[in-house]
Length: 120
Image 1 (tube, one colour):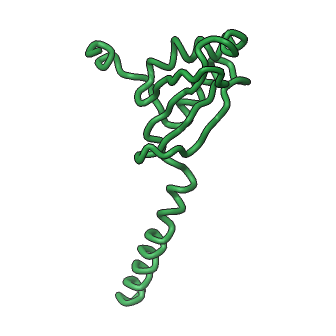
Image 2: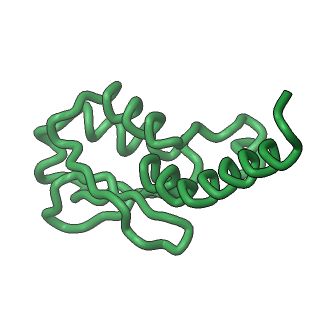
């Protein structure tokens, strides 16, 4: 049977490791508070029908995701943290509509509930 001192020592080490490794855990899987798709409204989007449908039909259904028109810009997904600092930027040009939706979901975004739609 382990002594009380040994058990206390092991618990202290476990707690210290948990505290020390916590920042690494959040670094390994960043949290995205919001996202924005930046793109032109036509130009290059007309050559990307899947991405265009994603932007204008699917994107409005997601919480904390918006569209920003930038003349001549290629479509990109920009991900932000709680402080509205850009964390990641991904080009959408080579993705299908389904892949764009899967990308948003994989980054932690979900579609608005039906209750939210009724309020709008």
